[in-house]
Image (tube, rainbow, N blue to C red):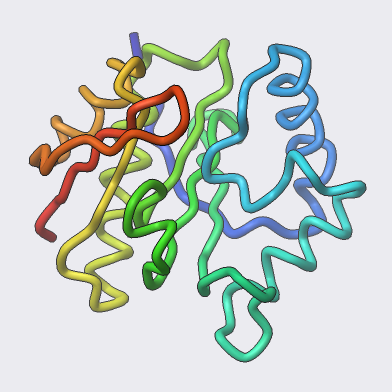
Length: 177
């Protein structure tokens, strides 16, 4: 369980985080898991390429084609500066995000799960949504991901329904901020 004093802060990525972020990426690839909320980190060939994309995606004038403006954050444990998770806030929804992806995507590294970090990161991201003027936030998860569903519910999520995508089912939750 999360210890007192193990609060999370959301930090914009920059050059100093290269080793931490690339280790995070490697962990997910080795486990065969998708990197949610990491702004195409899985597909990036280098940290510099990923960081440039993250920075470009923050601005509507430079966002990559087919994507919406988004801000990616590192979830950093305040007590020791450890990268425990990543979270991305999409400033708007396109058709795909409206059905499956939502405004927010997030992930937590395996060794840091079940400590409350996902819930804290989501809470902080919802505050940032409020600051951006996003008052109704869509957050989704796979139906089988009960931990994520609990995280969303604990942050005020209300299940709107489910959408089938291939063999999987995506649950869609709305949170009023």
